[in-house]
View (cartoon, rainbow, N blue to C red):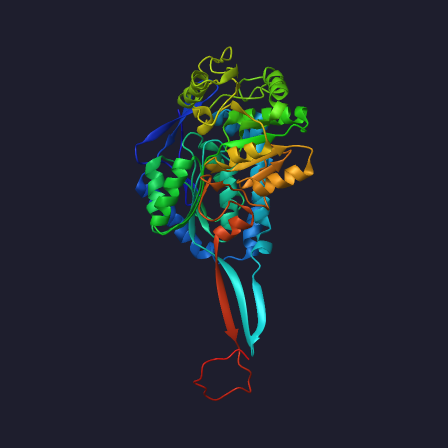
Length: 497
């Protein structure tokens, strides 16, 4: 059985802890690989390699950094099919979705290629007689990223390319469920000419995470995952003196007003709720239907959902693949059963879905719940699967109150033809990312990604300008070059004239 090892100091390093985790093919349910779990000592080895590499990489020229990143972008583009296949094999998402993930990650690599523009400082001349003040941004040192299973390539690429472009070195701890894509990203970075130790990958579980959070030489930690773990990462990391950005979970609402294009809204609800089997923090999991919108909208969603093709991710005919593990699949299915018991109408029940020839896979069909109320578990919890709930309200004001009462504030959307209503919504809704007739408003690379409330712990969103600021720190320099004619002694307090 193939073993996925670590990548430390520019080369593969076999695990020595003796602990391994299984890596499954979600479509078949079979374990096909194992991944080495790092001990605290192995994490320390990765951090030491990164610290040593920072001695030269941190002072390297912007030209050198960007030349490596441009080559890296070229290699990623050439290997995008291979990376997508690794994602599909371990995550289960369909190949087109995996390719899209790689493309979105490449956006941040491209942003990193333009880092000289982002690192330009400011200068004020003659603030006093022959005195100038400048502000610059400098790298932090060794930084780390802890990434989730649902985007094995994209989320790591949201972190390390920008971090290393800013002059830091990086230790990546990917999800133990999907380790191969991160390993490939490190291999390609080395091929692009990234010096040994600038990017390191350690696989593992909570032992590795805690070792990163406690290590005195790690200056900052980026995280994407569930809200409880994000809170833990932020609390533990900051207690150890680290800068932390921790992106948590979500319960994203899609508001549909009576004047909306219902065909567009139905298409968007299908795409946003069931794409990637609902295993993404920007998935729409609640449709809020205003007035008489609900019945015709549910009919259109059901009509489309019934036609979705569910199957192995490497089958070109498949539009949705399996869930990541059997345990997770069973948990998602329990919400459908629980919603029925709590009074919701189960319009579509996907809990018993199987695929012929792949009966042991982690299958879950799409589910659609109507007459869901805020007291139900299906509404309150982040399900992270292909379950869409419909909540009926009478007015816009009732809808906005419902949405703003949610503890999460990641992404949201409104569907309407009324520009005034859309503008009011984008100003009033309490969420970090808003779509107007766009169901999944994930920002492009040069704008930052992140939510509000329990969807974000820390002060910085990820990538974009926030990402640059997170991976650097400011310094202000006040300079006075005396004129050759100056001289003498003056013990008085300096004056601004």
